[in-house]
Image 1 (cartoon, helix red, strand yellow):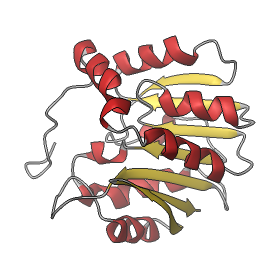
Image 2 (spheres, one colour):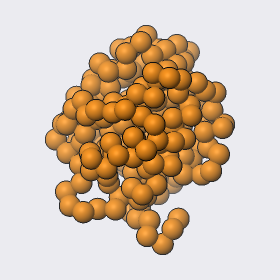
Image 3 (cartoon, helix red, strand yellow):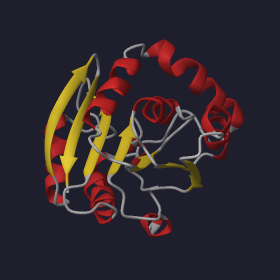
Image 4 (cartoon, rainbow, N blue to C red):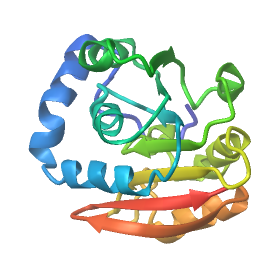
Length: 197
């Protein structure tokens, strides 16, 4: 972590923190269900999906229930979060669980690309500073074929904040990585952007 990166107040690699986050996620932000529906509506014909920072599998559960997905890879740096997602959807034949950290060099090489779509719901700020987004998005771009979709949702920053990118900053980072993008929804304090490789 660089000196200007924003430290996290919780450590999701700790079981207690992962369980607390899971209990509170939809309570604190009840509009997340609406966002999950937006993800499903904009996933298109994707049958091979990768989720970055999949957490306890809440988005995965919704997408596997509502979309014709043949292969869904849940990628997270937290072993307790992956365990929670296994409890939730481990019996689903499409689900694969991969422990890894998209902040680490070479993370994308460990995955079985290409994917038709990559999704990220409130996880990309875990790079801990928005200046890291162009590099992350270049890695994401390598995992998609031409025309592949990247759906990214994160917080609308309330003020100048090095952790969360504004919509304009998101679009600029995506463009620099070779994507075309558009905002497809803003719900409460979260936006959802669709990008095409």
